[in-house]
Image (spheres, rainbow, N blue to C red):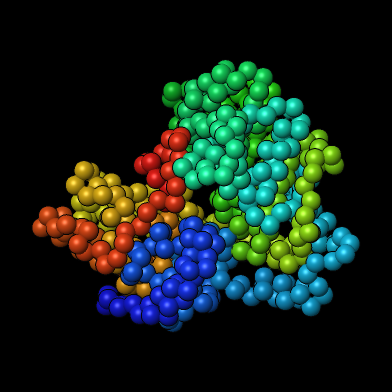
Length: 463
């Protein structure tokens, strides 16, 4: 495949202004220059359609980042756009409540196993934070056990190296445990008797929940979860110690299964949070759960002007039925398996399995890099990213697939990976310095956590 030389003159011009007036130069760390090879990669996108996006210099990309994962149908989906435009003509935010609040709540109750009630926010962090507040109100406790990534609010970010401005007491209230490690969770309960309000966790991201059944259990497939899987055991433990179980389904909701990871695994939490795919990237989030717990919101403050904004609600009302109608989760699984199996077969053919592997669930895979002491992991990632950009693919090590990603797109991507793996194999054989081949500043972690982050990357840095 012919290499494509990127022209990023306008991207650089805009960024030269932005870094003077915008802290970090970006609104979202994961969209900023630290996550892409700075000096080589584009910095600003201008438009998108389906699975493709165009930057301000009019370079076209097959997009695997998809707005940091909410674009489950693809850019500018016609049905969602139509619903949003029609609602804009009627109005976006009103002086009284709007019927859409009821319509979308009923839709969520029909779709999500734990949903008996719902309230809406705009960002994922809005609803993960109120879910924790609900648990604290219900239990009268203050401490939290968590696993995974849950947003920018104090109780979570306190335990990262970006904790500036956060009061120290938050560090003492939030306790991290490791995925598939029940002992690490029980230690938290025993060390803080009667203090843990909730266990909040991402139920599925990369690892499959371990089986805690009989040793001869053959129920290993991610589509056939053992009744005694890690998640079911976490639920039992949380309830045994008087805590609520919260599933952070910001990523898994509507993508892994229409009703989220809880539908796929058969483990129903007390509360759950949803965003991203709920409305195909039109800002909306929701906290749902058992009515007995959700009713605490009648006395627990969660209120803001855009809580009932109709644009996101109109988008969700159009998006969720289309996801069901088009069997989108099944499509993501199909094209995802094609990509994952194809990548790993290429790695095997080039004898690169020890350096690169496509891991995770087919609907949302991640490339794991391991330099084996010969190369820096992030430099390998940067080199792959650079060469993908050069060949018209926008990529940040994960594959956020959408309804718009078709088999032809996957085949195109595998052709590119084939070419890049061939180049990387030559680098290894010739013992070249990888840093000399990166035409810019390599990618850097967004932040580092005090707790073990193996859940995401098998390394200690966030992709």
